[in-house]
Length: 346
Figure 1 (cartoon, rainbow, N blue to C red):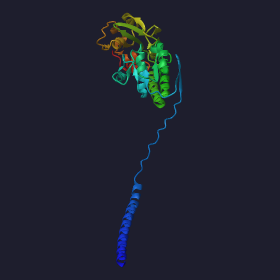
Figure 2 (figure 1 turned 90 degrees about the vertical axis):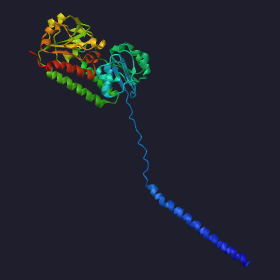
Figure 3 (figure 1 turned 60 degrees about the vertical axis):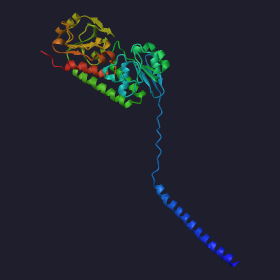
Figure 4 (figure 1 turned 180 degrees about the horizontal axis):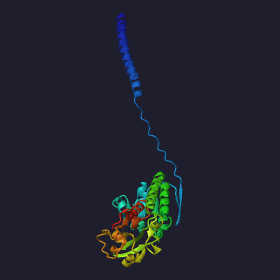
């Protein structure tokens, strides 16, 4: 019995040592965990990205000649069916979802080959199926597409730009300016729109300061396959006389959209000090534009304008395709000022 007790005592001692060793190991593990915990606590924590809160869009009501259009959300896909409207969007940095690509002026040429911009057909005859395919939430039109207003309005809210292409004598630049500011409100681009409007104001003021009190009389003619039309005070270019102060050499007052057909003899008899030539043929038939070498007309060459070197071959794409947008107006005003800035030839 003594021997058995002794064996149990030795066994118990050995077991106690083993328990003690196990306990020490467990403590060391626990101590190790405790030592690692502060280090882990010092690691930078991922901060959740701030939630982007979009300001509520205040509905905008636009009254125009064809009705009233309510814009109740920020437009994301805009179809512009007139090149003037494309220029407004371009100036405000608004993407164009669809536009006609038959006559795109040089200052908007980048849109011609953009695959993401839906081709909506012709300027004067938009393809309504293509307009629908562009999935617009806003459509911009002018009088050239006015007869499609009801159909377009069923596709998306449609705004008519109330510019008068037939008679720009009154408030033409003011109408362009107001449309720019309206689009600025619609697209939350008020500051940029105001900046662009002020640039236009400055260009008009520059022209008026240059032209006011000048005695020269100017004639604006449109060239179309060898024939000419004249534009007077009540015409698509009436604003040049009214807003910029240019004196007209034409006795015609009402000349409308396409001008008053005239002969070379008429130009010779009017004998303008300044002659502006807008080459419609170059635009519509995509031919090289007229210049002093290619215009072989002896009667025009006898005018005071030709002899004094004050014939301006205007930017036909700005004058004929557009003429009612920020960029086109600035180009037109630059052309107008050219004649007054050129030294006269003896």
